[in-house]
Image 1 (tube, rainbow, N blue to C red):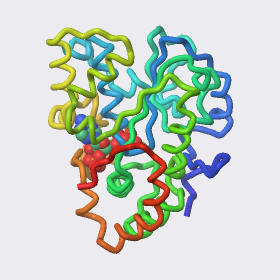
Image 2 (tube, rainbow, N blue to C red; image 1 turned 90 degrees about the vertical axis):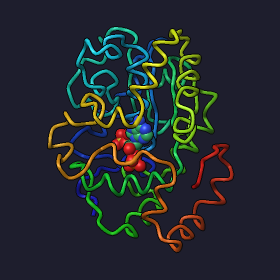
Image 3 (cartoon, rainbow, N blue to C red; image 1 turned 30 degrees about the vertical axis):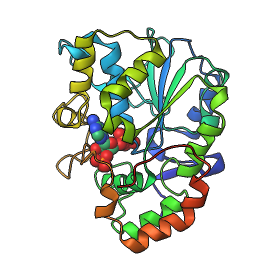
Image 4 (cartoon, rainbow, N blue to C red; image 1 turned 135 degrees about the vertical axis):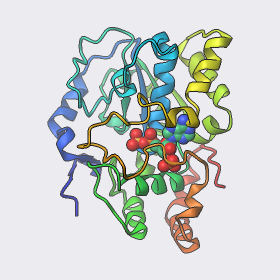
Length: 285
Ligand code: PPS
């Protein structure tokens, strides 16, 4: 079943041919600068959205359209260096994104060097988004039966492992990091407020006009047609074009259109009690 994936310690699953366990091990010693900024997420939780926001905040050439650089090159994945960038010698401030659990990121980051923005999303919407995405993403196994995917998600057998362990790990160890927690739902309800929170956390002062531009350009409707941000430029070996859009719906509560009542109850029976330990206020409908 898992021919496409490799398993790391603690059951963390990753796509096999975009990285290796050895490379991820080596990240332990990757030197972090105080000016480094990381977006950390479980997949399908608002990663590309947050990458785009960071890119827009930091790069005037992105905001004013004078530079045509893909967001994935502005804010590359730490653990999947797909474009073979020289991460060590990148000029500051370096922006990165990661799906890694808290214990596998560079040691310096766990010692409060650099900054982390952790974005979490209602896990019912996460699993539904993952389900649809698995049809487009060449690196993921396509699972056409939602029930099978749901059971795997609940058992932590999807890429990046257990949602609960991921979010629980980052939250429990929050004092090891300079970290800001945000939810997809609060970004959706008040994007301007979320961008302001991010700017405050990063110590970045934008003018009102710049802020307006970031908010406008990071809206779903704008990103959907922005090739730099919507994965249109990803090679077919990553994303099979023509099968659907990476930016699919971008809403809160779409899980209801895929999950049956029985599946939702099954989800609750495994997750609800355990989720009470988390402080996140997800919106469920
Ligand atoms: S990945 O593959 O892990 O990087 O995916 P990720 O980017 O975390 O999640 C993809 C979902 O985020 C939605 N998205 C947005 N929603 C609202 N506004 C904006 N601007 C936005 N950008 C991305 C995207 O549509 C996916 O969610 P679903 O529910 O599938 O539409």
